[in-house]
Image (cartoon, rainbow, N blue to C red):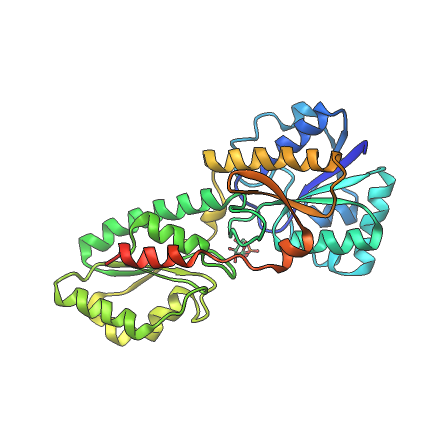
Length: 323
Ligand code: F6P
């Protein structure tokens, strides 16, 4: 392996730049040539490649977003789009690619690699933490910190006015951000797709709180909740809630931005470094991850298809701590 390409794809996540920096520096240290591809698979199809050297990734470890920019590419889902991408990789003499992204990114990498024989290594970057093969994904810790900071502020006003808030956090299909935010902010309840939601039980909690004079509550709802997120849940129990002046707050995309936390910088640096090392050791079509504080690899098949769910003990703990 002499030349590699690296790109970020799918939803951005704080720490992607730290991962890119680690890839470029580890590659440079091993005398590999690195090309950065702009806007993920879109740039691969359009031939937007640029040579990246050691100094090109200076001063980015602390920046949110991705300096390579990103996209969710529909064209890469077609064989024609992938063939154009393969032509560009061959034109640049690329021996292997490092893809930083989530499930869709890894799925694209696997299909592409099978069709065109170019090896890939995946680096898990998504705030949702929904990828199998790593305890945490790059960006999750920062997103949870951002959500907790927002909920801390909402609590102040909820408490002052004795109001009930339904706060919706991100997670397309996953309750990780919601669960960690709820535990970390001391929320009254958390509603996630991985645990059954009993609205009667929730109403009973509100009634009990009301009876003892506590109207103020903060309920964290995962965006991917099957009952329709925070607005959906609030609508279903609004009659019960009239006296509590329920409010719905959607934290939204601010969870995707901001400077990465120390934990995300560390994780991203380890995984970017490991991705290059694993390629040099001859591994391919695997995702790197950190499991029990050790770097491990997982086949794309498992990373894409195996489900990762929050531990049931944590879900139980969240409810015990909120009594
Ligand atoms: O996968 C990360 C994520 O932020 C999800 O939590 C969310 O559902 C989705 O991306 C939003 O995507 P977009 O920014 O394309 O609207």
